[in-house]
Image (cartoon, rainbow, N blue to C red; front, side):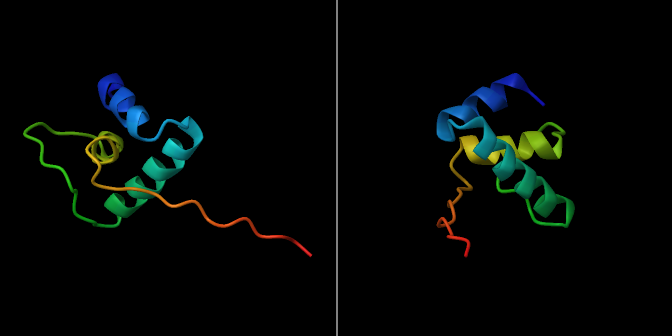
Length: 70
């Protein structure tokens, strides 16, 4: 994982825990055949692709509503 992509993604999603979840979900989608939303002339890992997508604003996230147990 490239540090520059990670730093750029953290400026968009500044909570590292949320960023890990977003990137993890996106990597799973890419592994299943989803098309990357960024173009690169170099060979990138799926993690780097997901980080660049976040950094460039190509993907976003939505926090779920809190549910009360009972």
